[in-house]
Picture 1 (cartoon, one colour):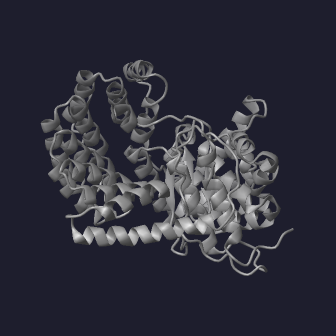
Picture 2: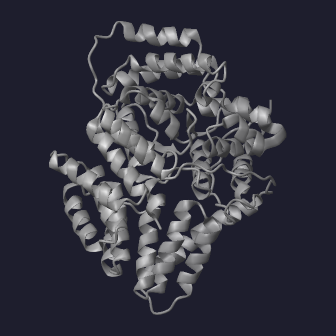
Picture 3: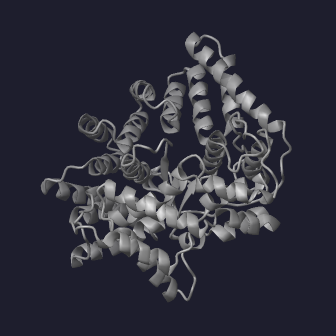
Length: 511
């Protein structure tokens, strides 16, 4: 076994290797993201990656994944996962890691944890879970892998694979639920080593089950859900003639694990734990993305008519979302109005209603709808993003900029808000501010080269806000330093392509 390096060299090579995938593959964006300054990995005698190294590797993998479109661009879905995950994290005050929960648009049943507290969940798993507690049980399990530092321990045990292979493997796992296929495509001869690095040991799995069970119970979910989900996945494996879901290939499921999960829940007093309305609505939204738009409308309409749903409000919401995707604005608006006549108030319904008006080019109606909704739900992300977008479409960039700048005071690294501010300033004839915000948008997406180009343009502008120029110059120095750190190391050369994934309603309606 190779000892861990005593400097950041190995980790820099790993992140540089993973991040240069986008440069080598013609199908991917030309501007590959570059990593932030990386910390020392610690003494060679250490048996695991240091905490700072974990965070750096996870952060740069996420930047690369975002730059290449592997993370589902859907505020409704990601915000729900973040809320659910943070509820579990809050159940254990000893957890010090900061977590980010996000969705991957892939039909395979899979979830995974990256170094640094990034937890991804495939949309296929969200749809496979039959209750919110089942979905929470998977998140609790992945949280436990992070809190118990299983990932770092596995990487340390697999250093012969090389940190470059491990970093590339992380990106492959995000890129597609089919982990073994993606790894083979990216790491070639190192695929077996990379796969071994994320196949958790039985000891780790039992520990994650035990710690995750405690989280699940403390957070107020049904503790029996872990065992029920395990059993159903195992049954599915039998039906598929041993072709196990991806999650089971990286998290080996044995009869002992199922029995232990059942034993833990056996002595717990039965109490019914209802699913949240958001659980059903997010699943309905995801179902509206499946297949062709017309097929989704017909399928969801049939389920509504025949009463094949668990939550009628969510079913009608999903049907309305499918109608919007099909650009049947009249029927979509009628469905939302029917929900409102039933007295249903929910931020996801408000956001959908505004988007229907926006897409039907009733900008005045959409703006009024968003402004009223934001008074009731000021922090709902879909509303926060769609309101300034509608102002831009309506030809009111000044109000769009004011709103975006106000929200950036609380969400300084929000790429979507920076992009809308950039568009607004461009329309107002203020190029310095526009280039600055476009640079911040690229930086948030992991496109460091594009960010540097935009910030250079911002600093060359004359007659703009002097404070903005100072900020742009400071950020430019920071990003150039990041770029130099990468260029100090050799860049491995490989090629890869991320599979096309289901997109979100934002993408369906963007044009």
